[in-house]
Image (cartoon, rainbow, N blue to C red; front, top):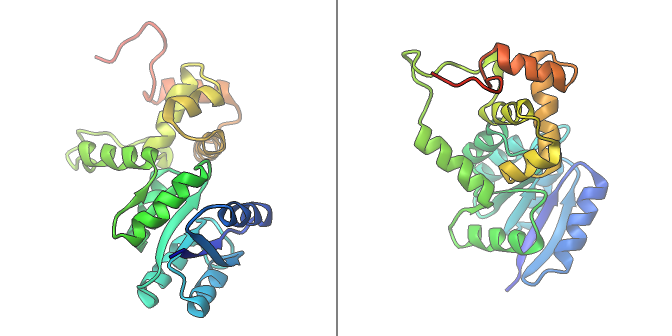
Amino acid sequence: MSARVVVADDQSVVREGIVMLLGLLPGIEVVGSAKDGEEAVALVAEHAPDVVLMDLRMPRCDGVEATRRIRRDFPGTQVVVLTTFDDDDSLFPALRAGARGYLTKDAGGDEIVRAVHAVLSGEAGLSPAIQRRLLEQVTEGPPRADGGEPELPDGMTPREAEVLVLIAEGMSNGEIARSLHISQATVKSHINNLFAKAGLRDRAQAVRYAYVRGIARPPGTSFT
């Protein structure tokens, strides 16, 4: 039996592309597509799909709130996030809202099918990169209250700090993407976010900021 799926994404080209891709995949039937979270919730009420492939950043009602409403009101429908973003500020709110899967938009068709069928089997449909993020959180634990782990400046997330360190090491966006196993679009998003938070104009300022704030060390120095 095919899994009945609703696709929610505010970008029409992306949404139509996902629908077209899913139409070619075995075991998937697309029963509707939505341009925002409000439409996604309405389509779930109308069609009772098995799974919603949910973008996060959408107008009117974002993916986190739509996920929360769907899981509260229609518990028979599972949610798999399909987004550009894999930072902690996107990942953990989505999982707390009830998403059982989380993929980035560089996922292939086979990976999407596996995630859809995984959540329908009661398992988690997570990409390898997201599994690593969760493992890092478990092994690192929460920030220490005694000041043993200094907070990152300007509201920067751990992933944004990772990107900043690699910028300071002279890596290009493509090299950062390969190093962190994420897409270049995700790298650009992290860079835009950290530049906005820290008031940076370019990579040269970012390198200086990383050194001054102690996030990275200039070549030839060591952490002691």
